[in-house]
Image (cartoon, rainbow, N blue to C red):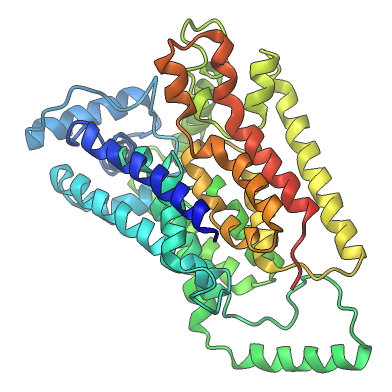
Length: 439
């Protein structure tokens, strides 16, 4: 990586880390994202419905009374309802939810930091980088901290880091499995050589230790508590035709779901209440009648492209699906054309394309952009001019544009700054599709 580029990332990372010093010390209310998960599983283990806002709030009141916690805020609507699937409540209830909250939230901070470190260590293995000097792990860590959403997400106890560490761990383990056919393009080699390679791959697959696909499946299943974030991981295993890994992951999800439904006093109410809560949250979003729109609706943090469409044309929510579908269709046609041209695409490149599409077309906030860390490897395949162009596209994910707008009084004329991150990610997708990386 160019030294000037590294220096820029170091300066941005130092600015982000300084937020820890500039803000008050975390208390029991500060890890609000983790608190929602903790209270949700506690409510469920009491036989109540974590998707019911009143039950969630009363559950938190019970915890602070029992543990004599000083709290000034509430979980749930209008800001942070429990929107994780039932198996997430099962996972948290079987693990850290067994601890008292006063002990659990400091430990969760430690786990989040450990997960971030594991991400940096595991990405080179997952991407198949054999020479550490080519792209050392500390550059992944530096890029992660330079992303403007990472430190705020750590402070709020976001489970994103734990989910990604599990997912990348699954990729690192699953990448060592050699299936008989990886489905990754068409070879232009002679037929005899292709047959010989297929026989070798089959022999290697038969000699693979069974623990690898099993371990990858367990990690993937545990990571599935953040469903949309794990979509590209599941797609990668589907592309590689690692059916055993997918089956084990599904079994883990099913087991955790069974635990959650077992805890519920009225299990039949879980899914309908969850659907109602999701609809309620969606109804609150994209509401220009709100005097603080788009700040209070979280539009300043969202990465999906429909967010930009809603800003340009309020009330256009029904067209989001069409816009996102067109994006997937266009990318799919480009990949199909490359396949037709007998281009054998690198597995990690396909994962990066799927990750970018996922961020653009599903509900993700700007801290989820840590999913794009493999761009460090992609940048090495670009000429120097395009490397700097890629950096320009990523600037909205690095610079505190929201803070600049707020410092200037948040005039309407600067609201466009809030919507530059999804446009930048869209530009990244364009560069990825224009510059494919083959094996």
